[in-house]
Image 1 (tube, rainbow, N blue to C red):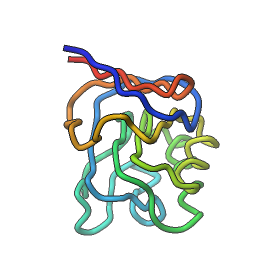
Image 2 (spheres, rainbow, N blue to C red):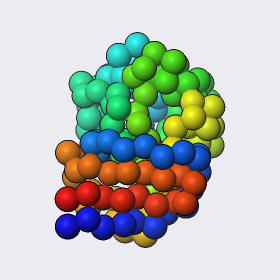
Image 3 (cartoon, helix red, strand yellow):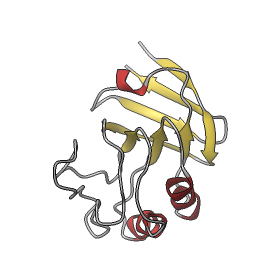
Length: 134
């Protein structure tokens, strides 16, 4: 059964992909390898996993302003997430999504902890909607 989650659009565009969920905030600077898209932060909930081509769901960003450029580098290297979903967007991640042309939404009407790895989602940053496919 498919369902829709209303959100606030942050960065325009649409993308579809498999969901990867992190309960931990993400720092792209030294937390994600821009060459591989693999999360390398020690002890992180998704340490060792690739975010490339995935709908990346996590609470919020953390860390340095350089993180925006890491998101951009991921895109240039073909290792960026397809889209980003946050509980609360913060400037670093929002800026990175915008300059990398990645759809991004936040403030979902449903708890993102209900989303599970492997679900398929289409994120529409223009309309502020996530469509979850069953």
